[in-house]
Length: 157
Image (cartoon, rainbow, N blue to C red; front, side, top):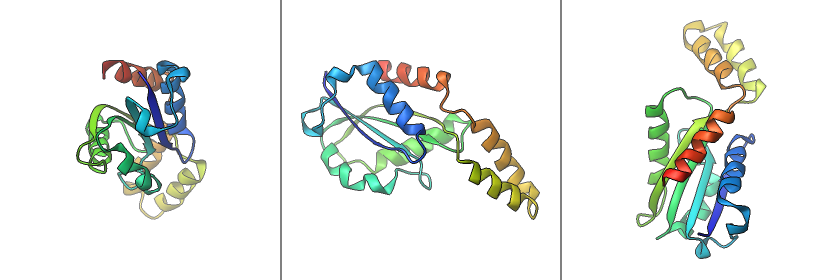
């Protein structure tokens, strides 16, 4: 089975997932031409709850293709939240693209984000202290458990 990967990774988290997917599927099976692929892996960091807008020019090529969606987001801890984000990813695809699998996990954020939260927490602790706690939980993700869960999702498609 041939596959192609389209990925946007702002901080490297989603790229780690793409790299693990390539290792699982075998780099010799990867093709550069989306049209020639039996499966397309579409990965993105989460931008305002959806795909990175920079991916929009790539999406028309997914018409009629089998697509595995994956990504990372700074906020997490709930499969229901991940499912909503993945639903938004899917809604950006051409109508005849077939989603054959999905995976989302938390990704760590840059330290400047925590610094910003700490500064804002001085004025509004009730709102920003939970965001600091989430930031701290995200450190180190995607971790090995996340990467293994991605492999499981790929195998289940």
